[in-house]
Length: 249
Length: 249
Image (cartoon, rainbow over all chains, first blue to last red):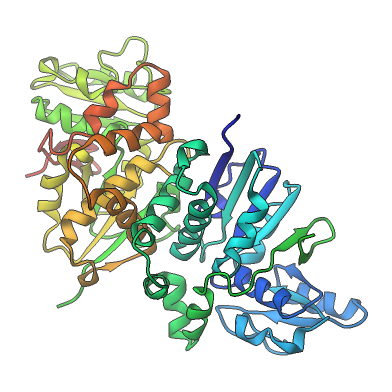
């Protein structure tokens, strides 16, 4: 049996130009796009439409019937005239059966970097186990971390490590892991081997640049939500060229 | 007392354009430029002149009196007409009191990316402790990993983690570590906390892309040399604009 091949890119910019991507990609933006996407679908949203700019989001919302909700952030903060920010806590009953046009700084870019893949799944700590269930048996997967303004993202790399740890189930030698995957797995296992709760994970995410940015703007509560493993057991899947994120079949 | 600031860049390309770099940078290219530089200086070489291209190396060697040795590699292999490759084992008595014009694919680029720093030290596992001795008391340091063809380098990140582990000495909260530094420290400590020898480190370097490349070209022995902590307790320092690597004062 061939050993499945897993490449982990710590930033979308690190995907080599012209690379043939894996048939399946997993995009991770723990703080907060993929966490929020899982929260929104778990709360009953019909789906999300990820766009890169605020202008694109507004224009698209005008065109669609029925009118979708507008959600997203810039520098972590809500956008004027938008219905929802990027805090997973705000994606509650209001989103039930609604479409959401969604713009974020880094998450959207990471998702769109996976245009060459047949399937693109969105992962975070809140939906870790159900994403891994979808990966079992696959030959080749690319993991793409969103990052924060071109910097290596601690929280996304730890989540990639958690995903690899669960998937490889103590037998990483049965997989072909690239350097990024090995590092992610090592970083996660450094703490998780002796894991008795999620306190250390919250502490670690608070130390990350993304976590410090959230703390600065008073949204520290989102760090705890984002660190709650399997809180929203839903797999968001991005479809292209339709550019829609819905629950995976 | 201010907590010293440490940023770790997993690739030179991840240094933000226009960033003000730290006064002191540490460049790491375990397989093999910085390992070999330490080996060469430990063997009594007068110094090394790092250049990016083979043509530049040849032209420079013609100009200098007395004629320097030519050293370096392309795709890990020796270059036609050069005196030395890039294997640390080949930097023996032949290099005593000689200058070496040295070209490597990734190491030279990483060194030259630190032009904005006042001091640039070259680190590897073979000179770990003596480099850390130089860092004690500094307020701000950038660590720059060389990488392999634009990919995150497991071996360099582990070495950065080892350096941070030794330097922060069990008290990382007394430092301001960026996400890259935290990840490097986690990855190193995953194994090193229970460390009783260097077997695991050799195994880990073998798994890295750089290690697999060396194994493919029959230079696996260099992996063991590169994993021998403190084998060459010399600190190479790069001086710019002179572009010379010599023993640090």
